[in-house]
Amino acid sequence: MARVNRWLFLLAMLMMKSTWAQPGEMGMLDNDKIRALRVAFITEQLDLSSEEAERFWPVHNAFHKQMRELQEERRALMVEVKEGDLSEAQMEANIQKSFTLEEKSIELKRKYHESFKKILSLEKVAALYGAEMEFQRRVLEELHKRKMRRE
Image 1 (cartoon, rainbow, N blue to C red):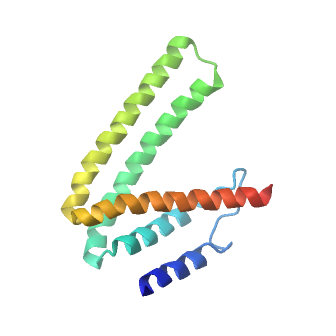
Image 2 (image 1 turned 90 degrees about the vertical axis):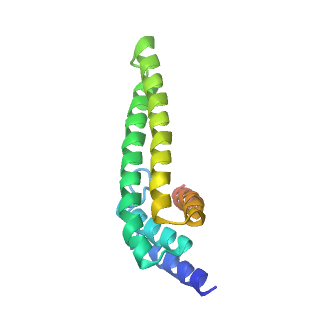
């Protein structure tokens, strides 16, 4: 229970306006702040020891970096398709490349799953996946709230 209260206090403090970047065009949150929140949230949810955290975070950060690169590449392909300035052959090629990138994403998840299991118990690895989804849900919820306040 004390752990939950500590997390709620940390979350409340970090969600204050001074912690978030000034909303831009899309009301986006500062990526560095989001990363710091993610680290705090996952560390708390997984109840990582200092030794586990020391070994886990470099691997997790490498995983997220590679996943972001794949997502950015896929997003760029789909923007080209959406803009509609491509021939049908180019559109099809971009869509197929997008599928390939999704497959690479799955392969990367499998690879890092094995790496995570070498550092954490399977129970904590499973909790990691749930914590990642919950964190993403909370960030999206905060973005939605910000959008609603602006309207």
